[in-house]
Amino acid sequence: MTDQPDPAEPMAPPAPPEPTAPYGVAGFLSGVATLGRGFGWIVRRKKLLGLGLLPPLIVSIVEIAAIVWLAMNAASWVESLTGFMASWDPAVVELARLALQIMVTIAAAFLAIITFVAVTLAVGAPIYDLIAAEVDRQLGLTDPAPQTLAYTVVRTIGQLIVTLAQSALVAVGVFAIGLIPVVGQVAGIAISFAWGSWAITKEVVGTPFQSRGLMDLVDRSAAMRSRRMYVFGFGLPTFALMAIPGLSIIVFPAAVAGGVLVTRGLLGDETSA
Image (tube, rainbow, N blue to C red):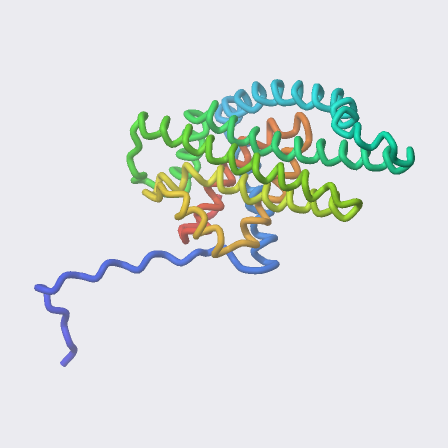
C-alpha cells in the first residue's frame, strides 16, 4: 500500500528554479551569445527599435559634445595642475603630463559610458520598460509583478543617483591608479572595463528583475555573482561597443532586450528567443 499525502497538511512551496546560465568559459561565451540574441530580437521589431534609438541618440549628442570639450581642454588643465614640475627635467615633465592626460581621458570615458547607460535608462524608462516587457511576454512571462508609476519614478531616480555616485568613485580610483607609470594605465583600463561591464549589466537587468518582484539591488547582485563569467560575457562586449561613438545608439536597445535574456538565465526561466 503506497503512502498518500494527508490532504490536511499544507503543500510545501515549489523549489525556486535553478539558474540555467553555465559557469566558467562556457558561461562567458553564453553571455556573449546572449548579447547577440538581444541584437537579433530588437532588429526584428522595427517599431520598438525605432523607439529605443531616440533616448541614446539624445544623450549621445550631449555626451559627445562634453567629451570633445574635455579633450580640447585636458592638456591645459594638466599643465596648470602640474606647475610644481617646472624645475624637473623637461623630458620627465612631458612624459608625466602625457600620462596624466591619458588617465584623465580614460577616467572621463569610463564615467561617460556608465552615465550614458544610467541617464539613457532614466530618460527612456517608459520605452525600455516596454521593450523589456515585450521580450518577457514573447518568452512566456504572462503575470509580471505590478509596478506603479510613482514607484517607477522613485526607483529610476534612486538608481541613477546610486550609479552616478559609485561610478564617480571608481573614476577617481582609476585616475589615481593611472598615476603609476605604464602599469597604472593598463590597470586603469582593465578596472574600467571590469567595473563598467558589471555596472551596465546590473542596470539593464533592473526592469526584468522587478517584473519578477525582485526590487532590491541585493537580489540583482546576488544573482549576478552566482554566474560571474556569464555576466562578464554579456557585459564586456556591451561596454566595449558602447565606447564607440555612434554605435552605442543601436547597442543600447539590443542590450535592454539582452538584459531580459540575462535575467532569465540567472533566475532559471531561460527560453529560446
